[in-house]
Image (cartoon, rainbow, N blue to C red):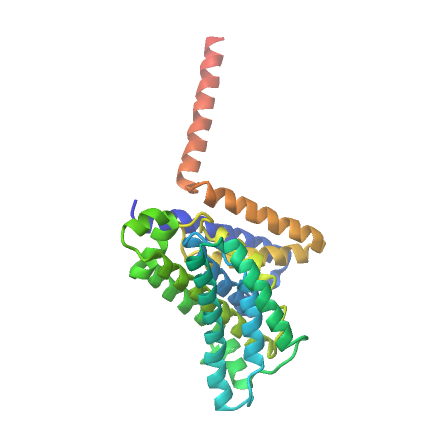
Length: 340
């Protein structure tokens, strides 16, 4: 089976589920079908897409990043705390300083994990706590300010037609897909997640790859924090905490295996949409937030069943098996009646 066939088997079911959920949401609330609501959806899912991409890179390499929430939080705060608002200097600083911070934090995570040989779960949990504390020291309560031009450029519309968030996350996904499928670094990530021992024996610099995988995760987490700062026009030190679980859920729903070596980024939009639309439907149905957490957990478990167990949903085979089985049962029933 070639790569294209694998992508079809992996991603088409995700987007079919989106269509079903979208129709259900539209039936419950017709405003879902309007263009303005879709533009709003593009804006809301963009930070989650960035976080899901970050988690996907790490999970493909056989790791996990529990510090992603802290990275989003600290870069969000840094972006809104830069000097000289509404000046060209502030815009330049906004473009580079948070990204540098996210990349540095990610590289530190990768360095500790690869050189120390420690479990990614524990390392990123610990560093996440450290950076969350640092974030609260910088900004104990929500505040800060973003240049109006930055906010308009990031969350507005290009040529007054194309929503900027849509363009931003599409370009980012295309770049990430190219990196994973068409570069030596991307192939090394898959090899590392598939079997680290074989990857090492094949000459792949596993330590170096791990370091840069977590660096990439930090960079993408910074994109999420920066986007949130432009969207909110300010910062919140705790804004990134919900993205820890949500990013893992989106990556898993999108078809990336927690065991590593299998998956990709083409289903990230679908995963983010599924996660967000389900939240909206639960809110529209006035379901308690307590039960919403239960629903999120169940979604993650169901996604794990399909990805971790290696199940590939093949709709054609399922339908063929169902109808053939039904036909055999009818034929058997007819034979029994004739014998009687």
